Amino acid sequence: MFERRFTMLIDGEALHGTSSFDVINPATAAAFASCPRADRAFADRAVAAAKAAFPGWAALPVETRAAAVAKLADALEARASEFASLLTAEQGKPLDQAMFEVMASVFTLRAFAGMRSETNVLKDEAGHRVIEHRTALGVVVAITPWNFPLVLAMNKVGPALVTGNTVVLKPAPTTPLTSLLFGELCAQVLPRGVFNLICDQNDLGEHLTRHPDVAKVAFTGSTATGRKVLASSADSLKRVTLELGGNDAAIVLDDVPPAVAARKVYDGAMANAGQICVAIKRAYVPEAMYDRFCDEIAKIARAAVVDNGANQGAQIGPVQNAMQFEKVKALLADAREHGRVLAGGQPLDRPGYFIPPTIVCDLDDDARLVREEQFGPVLPVLKYRDIDEVIARANDSEYGLAGTVWGSDVARATEVAMKINSGTVWVNQHLAIDPNIPFRGAKQSGIGGELGQTGLHEYTQPHIVNAIALETSP
Ligand code: NAD
Image (cartoon, rainbow, N blue to C red; front, side, top):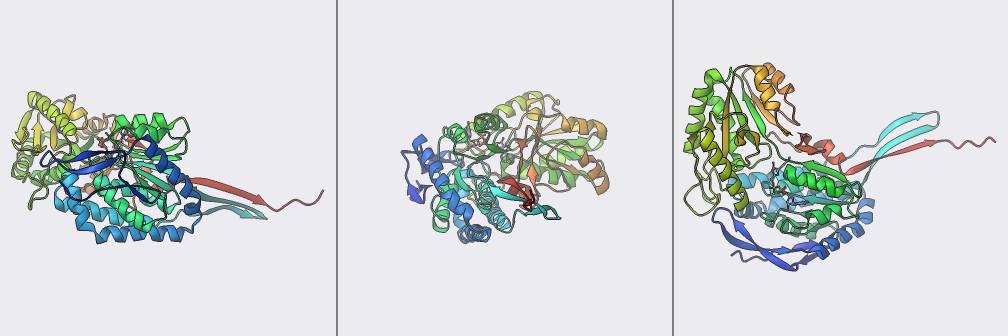
């Protein structure tokens, strides 16, 4: 077991909670650390602390708040290796990918430290002045999932703090530790109560999102839980941002060499063992190159190094938790029955939740692996005949998070991308997420957006001040 004792943070105080629970390393399926657990009374204390700290924090000059966020970025960067190892241990991703997430978190905080919500003068004539500016909302509850526990928290904490809100962060119970470590940095940098952090075992989400003193909920997680968040936030009409699930299609056009397409699609599907909201989850390939594409991508999958992410050379780590492991195994069993498995196909016979990169071809569009979000290293490859048909099939999903189009003729690929009904479509690239570019889901992949100026505005209320000179004549 890990020697270090992790603590929650409420009103500047490091707290051990009412009880604790084990955190499992998914590469061994064994407990390696203990996490403090909050109950409802702790959750209420965290919200109360954030509420009490709000007026003082919101009243500070924006430059002071932004400087504090920039300082958090520096503090995180200074301890990047420590955060990356802990992230690999709790989440499972290979160390280089963990370091990438830590540095993305640093860049995200820095980007928000440099952003400002502007004041617009809508009218300024003949003594009549109309100003639109933006004010903070109050207490923000941030709830994060287990696939990118650190950077998804920063997408929320950065803009919330810069704009003058105070925060209660609740990480996913299977990956709480990097957030707890981040809490230690916050305790050193921020005034007490501005940032609070509590941990649960999937049992405090509803209490927090229903809490009358919470002004906004910033949630990333599954569509099923997103629906519950929307419902429990309704009583007090909270502002809600929902970043939810996806079933992103990759469309390969007929002018891409099959080996090139196979490499790009493989990378987009298998990073973080497929546990990325915008991972390629269905690949559509022209009939004429289908067999060559399948051969190439299966070859790449078979050559992948699947191992404990802490080991040098590991490319694919384990699935993050036992529940997700069982879910992916069930989808695999269904795919084995209805399709043709070209690589992988069975969990590895070793401790931990390892599934090798799996390529399945010849599935129907209504197969579970095609319709559902697999969130694991298992990719269905489907064939198509013409462009209109493949666009319709890509759009035939309740999800609409992102997608990719691959083509040598960029203009033609862009034309196809314009017809995909999702929040983002990348052409000839994948995962080009940038803190300065807004990110949002269409359909049941979300409400509202994160990142960019949009992501900043989501933490503010537009405020109009409409003034004229006083009429003094009787
Ligand atoms: P999840 O919905 O099971 O859990 C997410 C968080 O919600 C956890 O912290 C959990 O404790 C909390 N929670 C559970 N019940 C709650 C309730 N009733 N009210 C409020 N919060 C509650 O999701 P997960 O399995 O941790 O994450 C995987 C999902 O997240 C996938 O569907 C993935 O696509 C999605 N995701 C989306 C994005 C995006 O930006 N759109 C990014 C990453 C992950």
